[in-house]
Image (tube, rainbow, N blue to C red):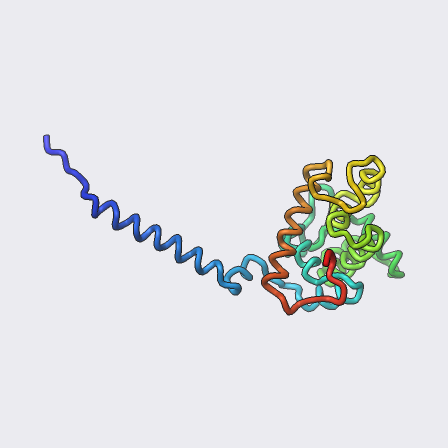
Length: 200
């Protein structure tokens, strides 16, 4: 019986190529233009217009859109949240009423310009209520302002708001993801700022 042995050179050569490939991919991913493929801004002009109008950082709004819908305008959650910013119809109707918009219908939420307008106003409204604290604002955006107020009253959350204090895992993970995206967007798009960046 003849046993063929594989030389060390034959093993090392592919391993070197694989390692070099991994390093090359890693180096390419460090390039801003490559990273922007994972952190795009498909609604840049709409977001800048609406977010700036209401004093919200456009990059925060973009981070919310990325985590809520991955920029897909026809998204709808199992709970019924609609559009790029995944607004609940009841919340959107309340916002539309506060803004003085008449004849609002939930189908309008599939239009990115309408969804982003309402969502930007809503984030600004939450920011006023929670003192501009991004953790509390995002927790309220995800879990509801009433629930966050209850958490503060019950002592789960302090007025400063810490992510680890959020008692609901889904909301805690959501806040973490949006803030991570927000930080990445600020790194990749330093020239896009508003007069009042949240959390700064």
